Image 1 (cartoon, helix red, strand yellow):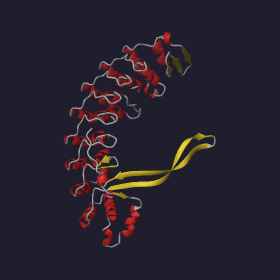
Image 2 (cartoon, rainbow, N blue to C red):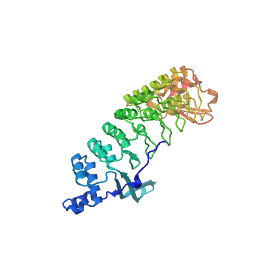
Image 3 (cartoon, rainbow, N blue to C red):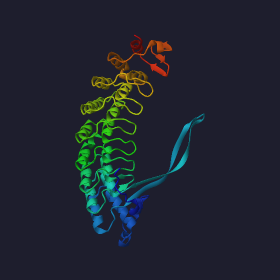
Image 4 (cartoon, rainbow, N blue to C red):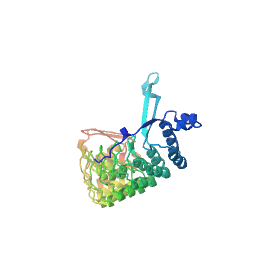
Length: 382
């Protein structure tokens, strides 16, 4: 994978412990104290973190300051580490935790959206691809959807395909609807739409599918994203969008995921391409009790009787989830699958049926299958 050279070993590092008090103690001192690089770097930090462009300009005109400096935000804190409950109540211990995080003036300005400070730093020699704390300034700008900062960095030579320490590109970090303009700018400056993450081998299209971003997905597809790209677990973008458990109260989000599903199918997604557990998109939609997804996939020719690695069909998947997703009316998904030709569970395969007014538990040859709706079992044995 393409990765830009890091410059941590070439840049000075400044400790920020008690920096505010240190500046207050030295603010009225003479010129000799300004010769101390440590104090100059602290004044630089304060100007950038406040977005004080005027103060930054005066500081850089008055003194020579290396703008590519690392700030070490580190502290020793006592943290309560809880353990399991005991007879006498919760147990735990106080542990001395040393926290360390690196950042830089450019990363701070990009993350906070201080475009004027960012431009001034770039014009005074700040390296746009410098990685601090595992991310470059471009990644920080994309996390917070600061489009103006993204464009400034790209104009000054930021690498749109640079990866974080976690192996993610800037496109992978565009995870909110507000980051659409950032994604457009990245693609305009040469971001590779099919460049996969290092660990999961996921494309930006996977990310758009998982976060329910139809406009991002359409943008990536228009730029040539591979609609059937499989991750390290064998999951395609279609499998990713069908595998997201929806919340009953978020209707707009649900429609966004459904729109992505339609979009992927329109661009030729393989509807029966399963992951390494042999779970097809229909398996995942059924397991999440998503009636609209199930109907859409069946309309496009999904294999209704596909069997996954555990021997489960889509019908078995929805029955297993009926315990925890009753609010989604799983019996409607069961009825749809049966009406479309799903193989029923043979009554001879049922070893035991325990029935009352509210609960039915079916024990088959392989696993315990709770079915919390009387209509489900009536459909199966009819």
